[in-house]
Amino acid sequence: MNVRRRHISAVALTAVAALGFGTLTACSSDSAAAGDTGSFDVVASFYPMAFLAERIGGEHVHVTSLTQPGQEPHDLEISARQTAQLEEADAALYLKGLQPSVDEAIGQSPIATKIDAAELTTLEEHGTEAGHDEEHGDEHGTEAGHDDEHGDEHAHEDEHGHDHEGGDPHIWLDPVRYAEVAEGVGKAFQKADPDHAADYRKNTAALVKDLKTLDEKFRTGLANRTTDVFVTTHAAFGYLAERYGLTEEAISGLDPDTEPSGARVKELQKIGKEDGVTTVFYETLVSDKTAKTLAGDTGLRTDVLDPVEGITDHSRGEDYFQVMEANLTALRTALGAR
Image (cartoon, rainbow, N blue to C red; front, side, top):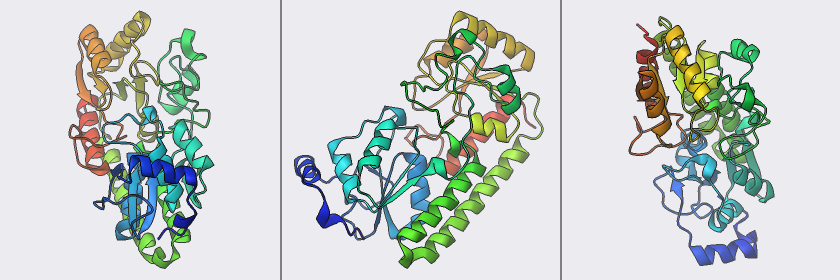
């Protein structure tokens, strides 16, 4: 499919010759490298974007993910081989603001179709600081903590100092926003590869329908609960909390590896007693040490709430929908839903 293959830069060719054409983490079973498949070649930044490309593109696309299974997406640094893959691809699907090295590489590449998921829905600010303003906490139901001493310092940085001034990037954890992104990706595919537009349109509609069903499952599954509050190590679930009227209390804001302060532990102990919190959630791609330490200090149990940033052998499911339904089960238990 790729029509720019013969125009690839000398730098990229050198990189490919040195490192080989092996695909990175491809969602497709095709093991050929991006740009050498005869299909519509899509390079996706990480799993939630690759999942969209696979579901919407179907048999017409070959998808290569820049982020390996088990790799924390924020940690990704683009390699020479990945830069070469971007040179050859027909389209890049990414989420600007989550992976700065990806943003830079795609911005500098000659790729014709660049799809930024952040532009396909509305981003908001929540969970972006360890000292969260109560006014915003009440407004969005997504308080990330209340340690004002550190609030300004971390206001727009994630766990690696990445700038998130555009808003919270975790839009895929809200099925409604994810469906909006899916519709935008479908339209972009139709425009870039018009020969298969009808199939892209059909596949997009099917995916959006599945996401609406997932939204309904969350609405009904969480309707009758004893508490609205849940505790996480990583402030990733702001959109999900807002969608379903919950309150996320993150131990360390956007930094899942930072030890909570003594003041924060005491605050969470108080919140736990007052709001009937039963569980401290941790995730599959980062250490569970902080969650277990807090749980031990507060007498709470621990469980997994997966931000679905990647699928591994430890994931509670084989794809986005299965893991999200596992998250719903975990939340129902933690919130006392009946």
